[in-house]
Length: 227
Image (cartoon, rainbow, N blue to C red; front, top):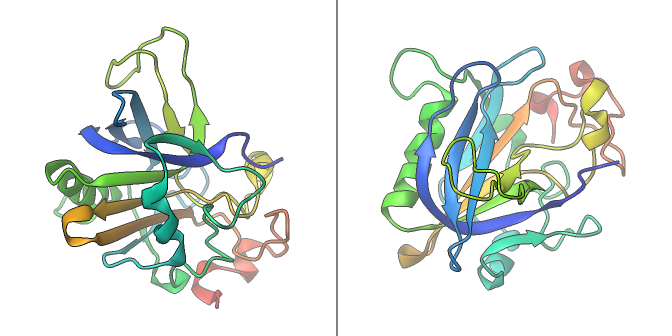
């Protein structure tokens, strides 16, 4: 079926909240240039075994995809028909080398050794330097007049599935599709520097068909063997 409302959210960070508890998410409060508030909910732990999420960051990220992003309006842009001009695809888009992804726990003792801290490092820099954030995933809301459960703005509104959205099995198979992967791109405009943050679950296969469904089990097509 693929994601119902896949797209990209453009705005600037207002606040952040580290993930904790069961099914933790790193939360980012975003505001567009018209004052509309959104929340980016980033999975930092998998509900499937293994629980550690695969993480890769490109600190000087460069791709044809980014050339079109500055022209987008602030707020949420719906990406229709699996559009490769704007949408992300970890398998087909040559965004990065999957072999460079590393599994990270959500939150453990120690410095700079978990996904909470890795995300915090880059998003806090974006907040402090007024950088533009582009978050790819699935839209939810606006939620009538309900307040956001974390940052309390009204109405609740945001984007999730900020990770690879293909190669799923079991109950998440319905989310599979191509050119609809999630991720975060940060544009530090003063120096024209881009940071790309990409996440995937170890339970996802990197061998997928034209509908994003796994054609080989993850054991036969791990991220470590993708070329």
